[in-house]
Image: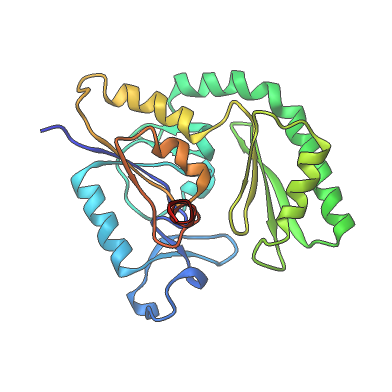
Length: 251
């Protein structure tokens, strides 16, 4: 019997911060899923914990996340497969070491966007200061290679990040780039970088010996949809950005 492959997003799919957990879920019923440097740790509800246990026991479960290698190291779930990190910039093997071939591809392709990422970060910060927006921003780097830019609001739920997105899309030609805004997260990904590209590369290798292996995907964001469409089946958490978009489209 072919062992299924499950590609699954992490934050807001398998777990979330306490603030996003159901208000009627007692704290003693929550399981620590990932530690945060700011103390806003990520937690699993009992149902999410049951889902995670089932996935790990039943399939080769591959995390597909925007988390950097450092942030992923703070995830407490005992995955024992590959992992796609930093929106596809890094693929770890089951032993936790980066896949050298993929690392070389990313180092080559992302180098062309390093100056633009730095300019986007500077321009976004200036736009935030002009708007009086309290936010933090940085470039996610892997092995000293710039991968993508992140902006987060400090004094809200990310509702004003659209102002930064507007300033950046007005000031730069971002054709081919991904501008991702979901909650308190605004990410700008260069054309060379995507979860879908990394999943396509990894899926081909995982199916090399057995092309009948089914692939299933789970994700919460609209930007997860491309990698989900690389799978045979996909799903999204109820109430997620992706689920809302699909529901509105169906209506």
